[in-house]
Length: 497
Image (cartoon, rainbow, N blue to C red; front, side):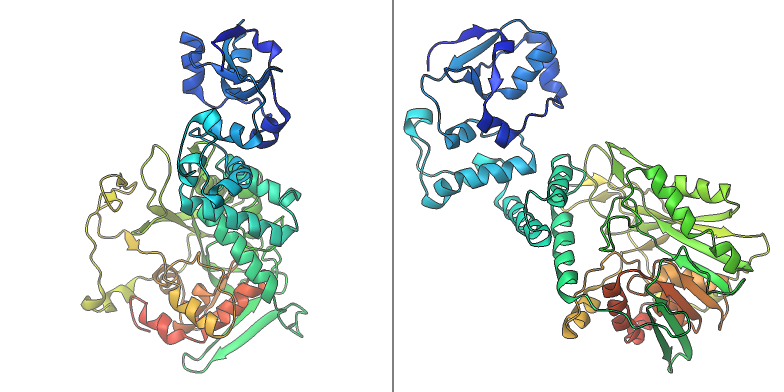
């Protein structure tokens, strides 16, 4: 290359190839680089070809345009570079996930052949290293490739609108790689094995009805939107125990308009509250409504979704009686400059102050069933990954528990050739505490988001009747597997029924 020259940045442009791989979006997200160039100017020259197309340094060029810098340093490559050479010149920079996939396709022949860099461009090298070249680990790359293949299988093409929407969310870190891959795999499983639920002759709705002879109680689970409770009688339910979809956490495979996928947290809270409007009619005057929710990060801050929802419920006439903190011992790792979030909230709503509440069952818990946990402050396997936990609570009355283990349910479903796709379940002691404290034997318990029937199984073991609602037929199949194994549920309770 020739010596450094200085050129008016307005005379430069992004090559068609470069735009195809790295995009044309003009947003500038690297504030550190922006501030550095604002103070010192552009120190590292851009690389351009003889036709003034930028080969490397697009972000610096965009910042120069933004700051109205009159000239920028450039190195002119005397001959046009091949596509793979341009990609190699961008080695080491942070790239969106979609760019990594495009670069991999471009450089794949070099990776597979074990060829090195072009010596006339970047000097001698023995092997082109995928990880160093693309800037991600081989594990991450393999997951991205599996995501791409899964999107093609689901939507027919990587260029399909739904495929591009997923890649866009990955690029902007709205989605994480591992959970996204799991969602895609789950969708593929459901598509391959989806079965229909039989119709209930009385209601005309798809449903499953069961009666457990051991625990002498019955259950019904409807494949139906829980906003409509029209076939439930007034003041028939004693306790609602629900864990609805959290905002922007999971895709439950029931369509684009499903709860939890709203564009804004405000819209989510209103839609969620709508599900509980008719609950007031069917809930007894002495009844209780429990709702388990968790917050998440959006645009670099917590959304406060649980508390927005609670406020919305109070506006609709519910009384917020209690707020229970569920301290999780094995939380999902929280990214960014913040503590690892270890807690979820369980709101206890009532219609009146005359609700039924009885804690006398606690005295019957055998002492050998009481669990004691270390007062852990750090979460992480080593000093490099450890972070302070977000929950510094040491009182004895805090509910501490792992998330529920679903490995046994996965194994049982596998034996019956039923895809296991719902791992977002709470442990049995959460609904156990709620149901024991606010209902009696023979009362009706309801879950508007039944999932794999954790609340249903606990209700059945505790000899309460149960009615649930679940839109995903695959989850209902998994629920039946759980309800066929109630002795396991019984063994997980604080107090054996």
